[in-house]
Amino acid sequence: MTSVGRDQKGIALSAPPARPPAAALAVRAGLVALAAAVLFFCYWRQSQAAPLSSDGSSNVLQAWDMLHGNLLLHNWWVSDVSFYTTELPQYMLIEAVVGLGPWVVHAAAAMTYTLLVLLAALLARGHSRGAAGWARALLAAGLMLSPQLSATSILLLSPDHTGTAVPLLVIWLLIDRVRPRWWVPGLVCLLFTVTMVADSIILLTGIVPLVLVGTGRALAGLIRRGKRPTAIWYELSLAGAAAVAGVAGSLGPRVMAALGGYRQSPVAAYTDLSQLQHGSWAALRGFLELFGANVFHITFLGTRPALEVVFVAVHLAGAILAVWALGLGLARIFRPGELIVPVFAVAIVANLAAYTISTRAQDLLGAREMAAVLPLGAVLAGRVLGDQIAAWIKAAKGWFVPVLSVLAAGYLAALGFGAAQAPAQSQPLAGWLAAHGLTRGLASYWQANSTTVASSGRVVVSAVVPDTSGRLMPRLWESDLASYDPARHYADFVVADGPAAWPGMTRSAELTFGHPARRYQADGYTILVWNTNVLAKLDGLGPN
Image 1: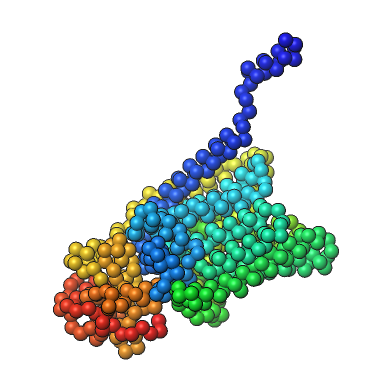
Image 2: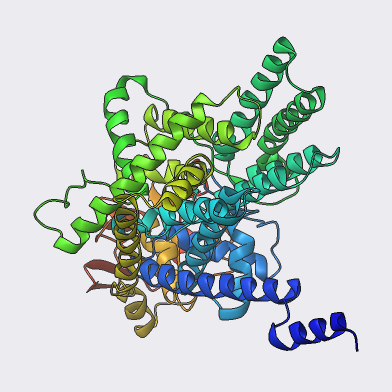
C-alpha cells in the first residue's frame, strides 16, 4: 500500500464521516417540530384563560355545518367577515378529529399563532444564512413570542383578523423565495383573492400596500432609468396582480349568495375624522398591547402582580425595535432591492391610519382590527435590524450581550407565565339548561351560539333581537335561518335578563310569546319557559 493510501486510511479511521445533508435536514426539522409543539402548548394554555364568546362559537358552528355537508353555508347569515377560506377550513379539520366544543377555538388559536411565529421567523430570515440569518429569524420570532395577557382575546381566541396574516405571510414567502417567473403574479393574484373572500382586511395589510409600493417603485425606476427593466416590470406585474385580486375578492359575497351560499351582513362605513385625537390614543395603546408593552393599561400600575409589570417593561424594548424598523422601512421605499421591506412598512402605516380614523378605535378589544401590525412589524424588524444585531453580538460589546440575554429571558418567562394561567370556567348556563331538559330556545347574541358550543350541541340557542315595536325577531348576524323554522324545530324557552343580555329582554319575550308557564333564575339569568313552540310566534325575518 502506498503512503497516500495509508494516509487516506488513517484519516478515514480517525475522523468521523461528514453528516449527510438529509440527516442535517432531519435534525433541523425535528428541532422545528419540537419548538412548534412547545409553542402550541403554551399558546393553547393561555388561550384557555379567556372565556369563549359567541363570535368564535359562531365560526365553530359554521365549520360544523360545513363538515356535515353544507359546504356553501346555505341559510347562514355571517358577519361582515366570513373567514370562509381561512379559519373555517381549519375549524373543520379540528372538529373532524375532536368533535364540537369550545376546545376547537382554543386549539385553532394556538395553531394559528404558532404558525405566525414560525412564518415570521422564516420570512424575516430571507436569504441570509449563518449568524445573520439566525439573528433575523430569532428577532422576528422573539417579538411575537409572548403575547400580553390582556391581549389574549385579540391574538389567541376567536378569528378576529389575526389569522388572516397567515396566508399573507405565505404569499410573501412565495414572492420572496421564488425567482421571478411569469406564473408568480398569477398565483399571487389567486391567493390574495381567496384570502379576501374570507377577510377584506387584506386590502389594508397586503393588497393596497403592494399596489402603491410596486407601482411607485416601478415609475421611479423608469424615470431614473437606473433600474433593470426586468425588475421594474416584475414589481409592476405583482402590483397589477394585487389590484386584480382586490376587485375579484370584493365580489366574493355576491358570488356566494348567487350560488345559494351564505349571505354576508353589510356594515356601513365607520370613518369618523372628528374622533382623530381619541383614535390616535386608541391606536397607540392598541399598538403597545399587540407587542405586549401596554404601559397605559388601566390595571398596569398598582393592581397587577409585580412580575407582570416587569414583563410589560421588557416588552417595551421590542415595541421600540418595531418602531425603529418601521422608520427604516419607510426610508427604503424607493431603494432598489427587496420589495418586502417597504411594502410591510406601508402596510403597517395603512393599517394604523385606517384604525385611527375609524369608529372601531374605542377600546383595547378594537385593536383586533390592526392585529396584523404585530407579525408585519416583527418581520420588518428581523429584516432591517437582524444583521446589525448579529454584528453587535459578534463584536461582543460589553453591554449588548448581557442586555440581550436579559430581554430574551424576560420574553421566555412571559411565555411560561401566560401558559401557567388558570383556564376560564366553562359556561354553567349550558349545563343548567341541559340538566333541566331545555334543549332548544332563544337568547341575546352573546348567550346564543356560545351556549350551543359550550354544551357541545346538546342545547341549541338561537339569537334574537327586539324590533322597533319591542317584539323579538331573528338576529341576522352569525345565525342559521333554518334554526328558526317552527316546522323543523321546537323551542320553548328564552334566556332573558342577565349578563350582556339585551335590555328589556323579559318584556320583549312576554310581548312576543305571552306570559311564560315557568320562570327560573340561573347563573345570573332569567329563563322563561312556555308550553308551546315559541318559534311559531317569532316575528318574521327582517333587517338586522
